[in-house]
Image (tube, rainbow, N blue to C red; front, side):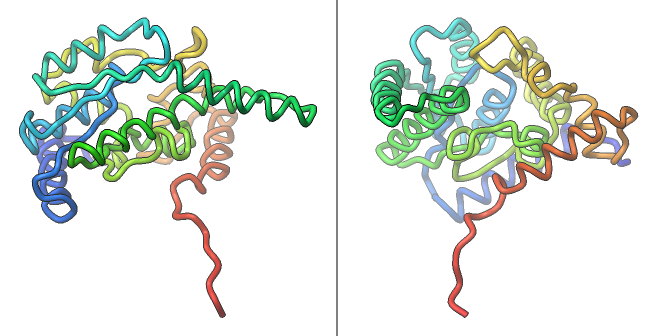
Length: 249
């Protein structure tokens, strides 16, 4: 397998972002949801290098109190970009309350998946509202590893206008973050679901290091984990494809 050259790939992604904006939004701004984790940090850093900090807008979107909001602000201050802070708590409570009431009227209840996926979908609605008012294009911050096993919310964090990290594994994203000189604690921050004390790797049942190696080499030493990865990959491929539509024969 070819050795990953972080500087070379970083420069390629930066040029790709410039070319994409030249074709799809000359003079437009990149609008990025800043969570304080590695993916949004790296995307923001890449966009700053590609477009200049004056064309990059960060958005923090806590759902009530966000314990690690200081990480989001550390990245925003490090890059010197403009930002908005929009709390989705009231919108989330209002919509969840209405959904819960409707379901109860039919002797049903809100599922855990609904609880998990509503915040990222509200956040994407927020990003597009700001983007359309700020001459923007919304950045997708998912990486290849997450996309491979469907660890994203369709029309939530999986949405966006351009995806700088969509072809990069977690380990590669971290390497580029270090190459960009981003705060190491953000690049190496353990990703979590925000709802429990579990990390993403706890929820997946395997590490990103194992997943990344499998993606890039096809090798997974544990047959049980290999089967789990394959199962998730097949079941979640629909998230990466265009919406199927009927064609007149």
